[in-house]
Image (tube, rainbow, N blue to C red; front, top):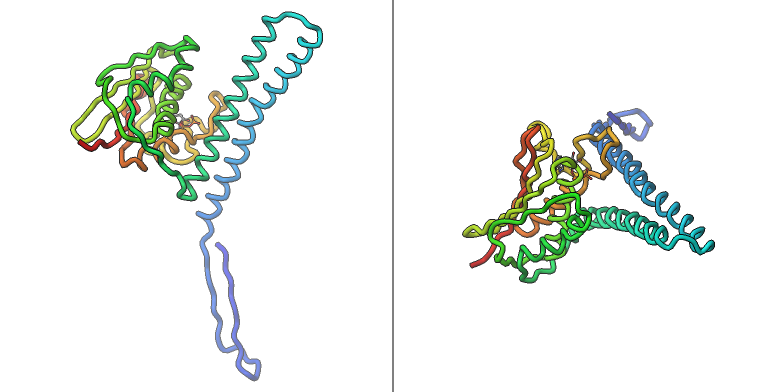
Length: 256
Ligand code: ADP
């Protein structure tokens, strides 16, 4: 609680009136704390790939100077590239959040085939070879939307399935055409999410395991995805049961 008071005097200097304000700054402090925590998490998240990038460059430098082992050179270039991509994703998330806060998330719409967009954006999962992606449903359906941003939503959901359900080797992606919208769902068979956490999942900075360092992340992927879907006039949600897995879904309206 912050209080402030001002005393008013008459011409003779005698106090005649006092005006006071009382301000509850608890909420303000909570938000400030959340921001401070976020900055420290974000810095840590950026530092990790940067340290690994630096190490790869130092090793590459040695390998090239000694003209040794070209296979190793390829491995470390690949590692450096992975670190750079991680940093790029983090910075893109941060930029997206500031655009959302400033109300400047512009949409650049075009018509495209949903299954094609999904196949292209999930190529990295197929190449990694650890997960089996199964695409089912109305694979010929087209939507009119911001392709890059919808791609971002799909990648967020699929990357989360990989990250939070590492033992679930199959990820199902289903496309359903309904009368007024197209529904896209991403299902994993991992640990699932307990029902009391579900209402918070799409909040900014929210992470279920916020204290553990088991999985890296900023708690922004689902928040950004929800903003993108809502800007298109669609809905986003999840059906999940602890121990059984999760199905994250979103809809994009279509005009007939
Ligand atoms: P981040 O992955 O950076 O933490 P997200 O906004 O993408 O941020 O996700 C928020 C939280 O939701 C995650 O920290 C995780 O706890 C939970 N979550 C998201 N997807 C899944 C999933 N497929 N299975 C289990 N938990 C998930």
